[in-house]
Image (cartoon, rainbow, N blue to C red; front, top):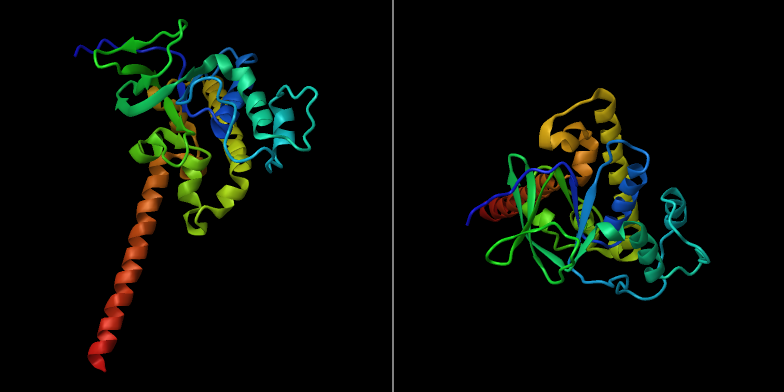
Length: 271
């Protein structure tokens, strides 16, 4: 198969998943687009087809951070009270400003890393006329290159399983690794709230990188966003860093268990 992909300048960020985390990140980046000559353009890939503002889990839920975040992101909450917000209310307010950047019905099959950035291999359930896509003979469409990819696609995140440098995790995709020891109980209780805060926090870090790059007129290639992020941000959100930390944690647990078995056997032999 002939590969005739060409580098593009925008969008530079791919967001996989259009739920609380992904849409919060998108809205944070969207705030910069009207005020910057060099915005961080993005595309959102969502496996569900429109409309997908309904989210399972009941009508009302606990999102204590949402009122302040809705004000910060200038979300349209006309005639809505923050008391008794439903999941659909929150999803519709987050989806509205960035709906045109969403490619719905897009199932990501593979994330490919090349010298010029990341390419997403996807199968699309629903096609629209305004997409500039490359289709292959086996119905796989390739989007890219992107400077970075953000996995906001839940516990089965494609970014989490590939764990490439320059890919990031927010919401459940990150939380499933970060809070493994409580068996997901806190994620169940505060998952939506944490996902929204994750998206806003990572988005603000990306905007800080863009401001730094514009101020210094820096061009460091396709890893520019990752290059300027602090080690604290990488350890919290970078899929590669999270994967390495998880492997270290598993190795440490295995060493402790083996040491306990060895000490028990030694005790038995000496008695």
